[in-house]
Length: 266
Image (cartoon, rainbow, N blue to C red):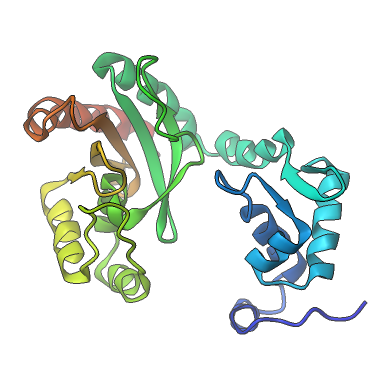
C-alpha cells in the first residue's frame, strides 16, 4: 500500500512523538472529529477537505468506521452512529472525577434552578464532563462532551489560571482569539489580565463573551492535594440574573460545593 503523503504538521508530530506513534489511528480520530453540530453528515470529499487528507485514506477510514458500527452511509453521505458514544463513555466510566461530579452538578442545578456544568481543559478548549439544566431552561447546546474555547468562558479562565506561568505563556503564544460576540476579549494583554485576576480571586465571571445573552461564573475544583482538576460553573440568561446576583448569590454556593467535593477528588 502506498504511503500517504504527510502534511508538515503531521511530519512534525511524528518526529516529536517517536516510532511508537500510530499515524493511522491519529488520522482516524481526525476524521471522527470532523463531524460536529454543524456538520452532522459529510460526503467523502467534504471529509477529505476538512481533515486535509487524500480521498483514498479518508475513504478507508470511513469504510472502517461503517464496518465497526461507528458510522453509517447511504452511499454518498456519512454520519456517526450512537455507538460513537461508547468512546466518550469509556472516559466517563474510567474517570472517577466525572462520576463524582455529575450527581453534584445535578444537585446544584436543582437547588439554584439554573444550568450547571463541570469541565476540564483540553488543549485550547474546555470540555464538559458533567452537565445539568432545569427543565424550564431553553437549550443552549451544552451537554457532556460539549466544547467551548477556554479563552472566552469562565470555565476556561479558571482552568487557565491553574496553569503554571510557563504553560500559560505557551497558551497565549499559540492562542487564536475569535470574537464570538461584541463582548469577547480578543486582546491578549486584556485576556491575560482576566486570567491573572481569576487566579488571584479564585473565580471567574464572564458576561456574554461566548454567547450573547448568556453569562456564567466558575470556580476551580481541587483534589485533596490542592491540584485543580476541573472547574464548576453556573450559567444563566443575562436578562434574568444580574451580575451582582451572580456574585452575591451563586458564587458562595459554588465555593461551598467545591469545598464539599474536594475530599472526594483524590
